[in-house]
Image: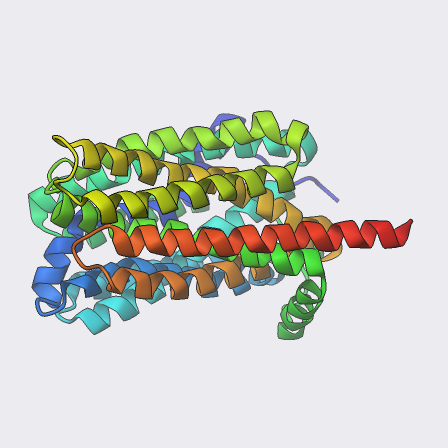
Length: 411
């Protein structure tokens, strides 16, 4: 059997990073548009504009369940192209719609389509590389990928200033046509026909049953869900807080770039420390620190409010705290994925889709109501993050207790 043809390493990394960036670009570039979308489509309830973000995440989570197994059956490129076609069609609907409900439906469909390049992109890496080569390729791709959240709001703000908020959906179409066109023209199919496996819904069902029967996997997915929820809460509410609370809508894209760039270093810190301290300790310490930070932020706002500290002190306190929330994701989500996958090597592809889908869908369902409770203060966000992190800390301690009992019983 011949080896699948490879692009040069540099071109492959660039293509992979662009495929991965579809999701970050689809979420973060929308942030500056939320006020205008609210005024245009939901003037009586501006908070509904935040659902533009969580509806996309919800669709992406559903798509994550199926795109991996589908690509195992029908080939990598075909599934990415079909996902891109759905993403582009939904972008056209979103660009033209005059109602909030149809916009949210279009965003769910966009999320379904966007799941394909993210999930199947990982499968292509696995097809072509292994071991340290795979880790190196992923490191380079993720390094490029972390820059997207930093620049996406700036790009979104630029598009809005030129052609209005609907133009952002036009930029999604251009982005997807370019990235998938690049894939079609340059990247050969990485999964030979003889290596494909039939698509069976029953396999997904049996994987779900097996995963949730395993205590460590079950608790790891629960923790991952709570950590994702804090991330999606923050993404949904960061722009309204900058705008309505601190009156810094104009400078928001620049501040978000700073937050994203600083948070991106969390992955480097985790890589340097996880071999010494272990995944479970890294997660537990990170979550515990966020419990303290989010509780302190909630108490600070309830005690001082916007005018209780001199100058812009409260704004800078908030920026430091929200950076810590995004930083926390870099210290936890990768480790939680690894813990989930450890006992699931025999169903790794399906397990990755199932765990990612479950965590994303449920976390979006948790984050959406928190966003809708926004009341002109950061408290819905700070309290929501505190509750989620307290629950995550409890789950991690419970996991370690069960694993200790199992180890003692095995002796």
